[in-house]
Length: 475
Image (tube, rainbow, N blue to C red; front, side, top):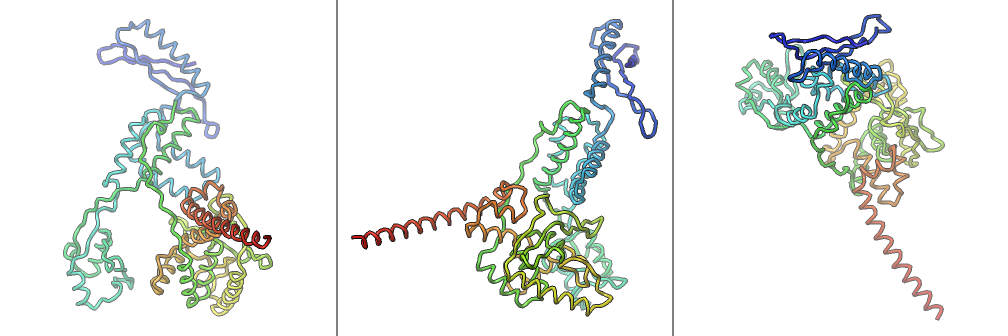
C-alpha cells in the first residue's frame, strides 16, 4: 500500500504530501530498491481534512500506475539511463565504432542533461542545448597558433630542413606549418620548447569562429531521442520530449565524387609504374566497388579463382581504444559475392606470387596473416595507410584528389552510364535496399537516364532509316 507523508512550511501550514510506493528488492543483491515517489501539492484554500482525503485518493491512483508500469521514475538521471541504454545496445550487437560515435555525442550532452532527472527534461532544455552546440564556444579547437616569420629565420639559422628534432631522438612534423596552416597551442608549446624559445616569440594566438557542423548537432539530437524514446517505451516518462524539440537541419548532402573515363585511364596508366601491391589494391577497389575496410579485410581464402569472384564477409576497422580489429561489414546485406574481370584476377595472381616471395625474403620479420593486403612486414594493414599512399600517388603523377571511396562511386557511375539496372548495382555495392542506392546516386542515375534516352532516340532514328530503305527495295 502507498505511504503518504505530510509536508508543512516554516509557519506550520500544510503545503504538500509525499507519496511513496514500495518497489521490492533487487533479485541479485537483495537490497531494497528505491521506492516510487511523487509529490501532490495542496491547492490554495483547502483545509487539512479535505487535503488528506484527496491525498489518499492520489496515493491509490499513483500506486495503481506504478503496478501497471505507467508511473514516471522521478529518480533516474539522464546520465544513468543513457549508460543503461548503451549497455542494452551493446548487448544486442551494436558495433564498436558505432558505440564510439554514440559516446562522442554523449560527451557533448552530459554537461547539460546528465544531472537532470528523466521526468524533468522538457523540449525547451533540448532546444537550448542545440543552440549552445551551434555556437563557436562549443568547439574546443578554435584557439590556435599561427607561426611568425621569425620562426622560419630561426630554423634557417639552425640548419633545420625537414622535421624538428626533439630531446630523446624524436622528431616533430612541421608539415602543417609549411602548408601555411595553424596548429594547436600544445603543439606550438612543444615546438617552442624544442627550440628553447618562448612560445610567444614564435607564434601568434588566432581565434577562429568555427562551429560544429549541423550533422554533428543532429547526431546529438538522435542520441537524445534514442535514450528518451527508450525511456518512453519502458514507461519511465509519459512522452519523449525530443519529438517536440527543434533540432538543426542537416546540411545538403554532397553529390558523390567520381572520376570520368579519361581520368580512370590516367589513373590506371600511372599505376603501371607503381609496386604490384598497390596496382592490385586500386584495381580491385575500382573493379569491385568495395569499401576500404572491406578491401583490407579480404582474405585469400575468399578468392574463388575458378569463378573469378571474391566473397566479402568482414571488414578491417581501427578504433583509438582498440587499434586494428576485424569486424562485420557495414550492414548484413554487405555480405556478398562479387565477380571480377579476368584482368583483375590475373593481377591478383601476380600479386599473390609477389607476396609469397616477399614473405620468404623477410623471414622472421614477416608476420603471417590471412589478409590479401598487408602491412610492410605482413599482418593487417591500417586503413589510413591506403589513404596516405593515394595522397602521395596523386602528387607524384599530377592526378586529381584520390580517396578510396571515390573508386566505389566511380564503379557505380560507370555501370549506370553503361545501362546496368539499379538493382544489380545495389547488390554489387552491398546496399540494404535499392532506395539506399537511389538516395546516394540519384544525381548520377538521372544523368545516366538522360544518356540512355539520347541513345534510344538514336536507335529509333536508325530504325526509321532502315524501314525507309527496306520499303524502297519492296517498291
